[in-house]
Amino acid sequence: MADFNVLDYFFWLLLIIAFVMEAWALFDALTVPDGAFSAAGKLSKKLWLIILIVAAVLGVAHAVAPGALGIRPIGLLLGILPVAAFIAAAVYLADVRPAVAPYKKKNGGRGGSNMGPYGPW
Image 1 (cartoon, one colour):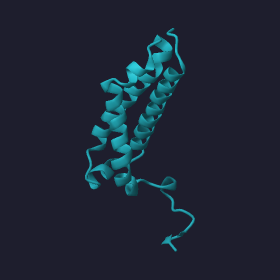
Image 2 (cartoon, helix red, strand yellow):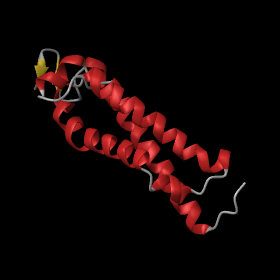
Image 3 (cartoon, rainbow, N blue to C red):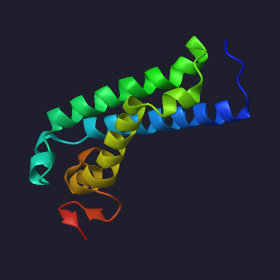
Image 4 (cartoon, rainbow, N blue to C red):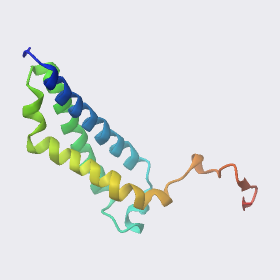
């Protein structure tokens, strides 16, 4: 294993945070109904899932590589693939997620506390 210094651990932490963000985007996209993407004028759910699955796979590979292979994290962090994966997740979370949020079912399809038996109070 490579001799890591404090800065290497910081960059490794950035790779892990990027993977967590990519996984969050993927799991969020899985909870959105299919028609919400087209209703919001975004790419299809299938295409977003492909993009986010690739991003999450790249993210986990780059987050695990420093520990498993002893690769210095700065070399991984500055590569084009982890940056592209992070940007894909960031675009989903910043642009697509707010656009499709009104179409998501909340509370398992039930209303919140302000819901009466026939709709909102």
